Image (tube, rainbow, N blue to C red):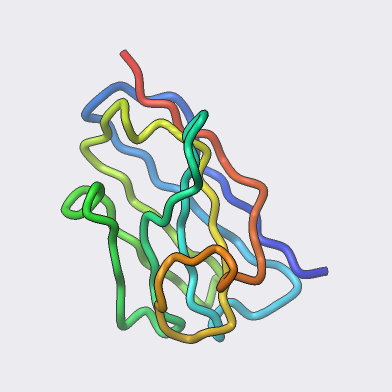
Length: 125
């Protein structure tokens, strides 16, 4: 069974940090580019970051540039999202998704084939 599982979410104060993990089971993540998305209450799902299958290329939404870092460890079949200097507006459910493209080709939701169930990130004092 192909599955992506996110973890690492939680409650953090503004300015704090969290590291999200996206672990794959049932398939080898190394063949897929991986995107992180988020969805806040009442808002559409938006792309946050993407990493190519070999980790050589990354992409970030303007809203997180300089604060978030995406990385992957294909040996562990896991992708990470390090989130620093968190702001209240980063509060959302965060999802990882895998696309059969090996490179980042944008954040169109229909380009991604496998999705995790999401992990809640809440930034609040």
